[in-house]
Image (tube, rainbow, N blue to C red; front, side):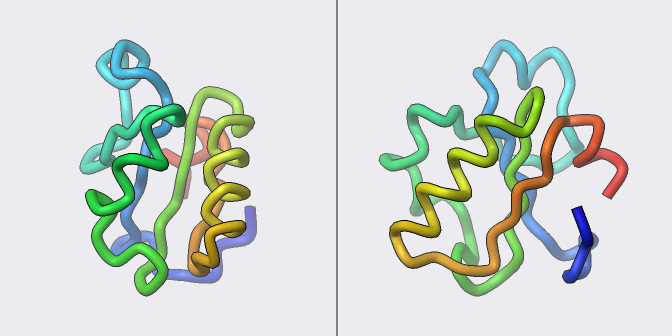
Length: 89
């Protein structure tokens, strides 16, 4: 992933399950499992305005989250890939 935003100010959203999140996550990341995302959008502060990076175990679920939000018209959202990749940003 080519970073085109300030990762220090970006919000990170972990779309893995709560159990996966509890097993380790990026500090400060919000946990919203993928299947709950459509119902919890108001919890993502700055969505569409500030950079929001989604991540999961492999990048698949985060890619689905980004695709869903793009279909809803949101911009400034990024697929951070796996937890390891998100930690490296």
